Length: 114
Length: 112
Image (cartoon, rainbow over all chains, first blue to last red):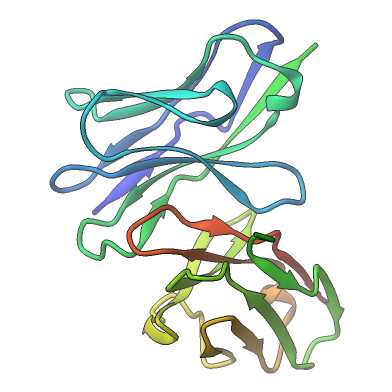
């Protein structure tokens, strides 16, 4: 089955430290991968996507993600975390059998401490 | 652009009542998606439309749920009759062509 896994329910990091939110995928063919962020009482906001090309994708708010085909991973990273980055982060992959649909992970809550 | 607009933002109703959630997609977007988010089940796709036509409603939980899109700028999700287990946050999202989805702020539904 096509799927996305976010192995960590929560990630805690101190402000100013680098952060990584993990995502692995299992899909047929070449994956189209996305990261979204959800702030409290808000809808999901698009951060970045990988379709093809450079394995390092840069997105909004200083976030970037690295596509690793051999490890089937698409980890979200930021060199220096801010308290305001605290939110729920979702990884998603386009369903290869219905490309209109996204398959979302269960989400990872990022907590950045001052 | 104002983004995807949803109303109401909060809805509290009693079991058995009809609930109607509304969505206005971003102008020019030809896809519209309805999702439900709960702690237990995460984010679930309920139904989506392309050019106002329902394409896939396999995620609609049961016949109590229905969705319509009478024109390109408006969609509704109706629950009749509502049940406590329908309590969730319902999101509408829209997309143009093959681009990323843009989500609305959601409607928090509580069924007592």
